[in-house]
Amino acid sequence: MVVSPNQPHALPLVPEFVTPQDGHDKQDCEIAAAKRWLDANHERLRESRVTILGDDLYCRQPFCEQLIEAGLNFIFVSRPTSHPTLYDHLNGIDLPTVTTTVNCGR
Image (cartoon, rainbow, N blue to C red):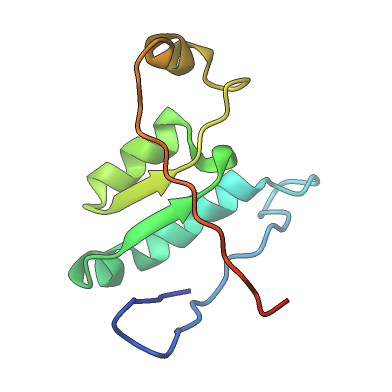
């Protein structure tokens, strides 16, 4: 989905489904589907200066390198259990913390 803080509308993007690929009996995975989606859409996204957001599943070097090669920016979540070296480097660094409370009308 494409969103902007300056626009009241959001534009959905065509998804890439997780399905068995030609010559394979087993279904592929979300990261393989994301790579196919990126191959099909990266030129249009690069022109629009899109930033890709994702969870820890996508925070892996091969996919990040593919995004960099495609000329796209990205922000991914990383978890301590899947990126222990990163968290070892961050341990002891006083990072700023931002806490926001959102009242949903209750």
